[in-house]
Amino acid sequence: MTQTTQAAEVKAFVTGAARAAYQTLTPQFERDTGHKLVSYFDLPPALVRKIDAGEPYDVIILSYDVDALIKQGKVVAGSRTVFGRVGVGVAVKQGAPKPDFSTVEAFKQSLLKANTIATSGEGSSGRYVASLIERLGIAEQVRPKIKSGGPGHSAVLLSRGEVDFVVSGLPPLIGTPGIEWLGYLPEEINSWLVFSGGVSVNAKEVEAGRALLKFLATPAALAVFKANGLEPP
Image (cartoon, rainbow, N blue to C red; front, side, top):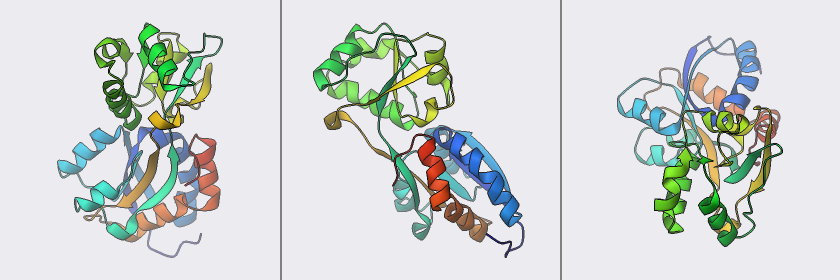
């Protein structure tokens, strides 16, 4: 990429689950373009609350489809960019007993038998798990066992041995030592979340924002997303 436009300061709202890949990739974008990124990381609901409060931003990257924000008139329709998808699975502290989640019933029993479980809470996978235990009819028994917090907190809880296992997407767990990813939930109860981005309808730096999204969707960049837990789009 060559420096073709005037250097801009791009404000980006980024889901915590994409932080590792994003921070690996963006220094090259800044070097190649001369643009400066001002990035704010949080769980998707907190980022959407910022948007609803009228806080200015140029680009948003979420651990779900920005199509919902496009329909609400908050993100430019033609700017939707997909970086990959992630399912919901189970991880344990290395050496800890492995829960059985080979079938829906086995997973249900593992949740009921566990003392404590970690999820991403208000993160995309955490909200899905909250709806799933309702669907499985075990919400009253399981909800009190769930521990959660901000981005990356479930990984910390697991690495410290403070929970029996984590039910979440893979990206927030990568990079924390002592964690073993066991795989995805059975297909009939899994949820594949698209990681995607878009440009704000009120963006000050529209072209620089589009350039960032284009850069993050190159084959080399998608390989970094894949290395950080995303399945290819």
